[in-house]
Amino acid sequence: MLICPNCKSKNLGKIGVNQYYCWDCFIELSVSKGMIYTHQVEEDGTLSSLDDLFDEHERTIHF
Image (cartoon, rainbow, N blue to C red; front, side):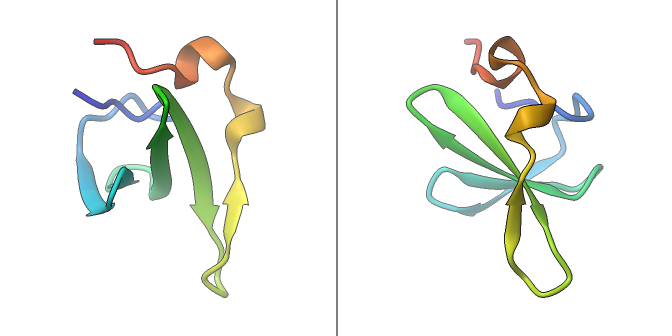
């Protein structure tokens, strides 16, 4: 199960292929090759990366 690396919530909605949205902290997540990539949705609809806020261990999917 996927967990938000920011708020540790499991309250994620699927918005596309390998793309999710955290309903608790309002960030978008994408998954590729076992790694979670985090993005903030800006007012104009663009995405800003938040990956630099988390270390690699926090962004790795653990099964």
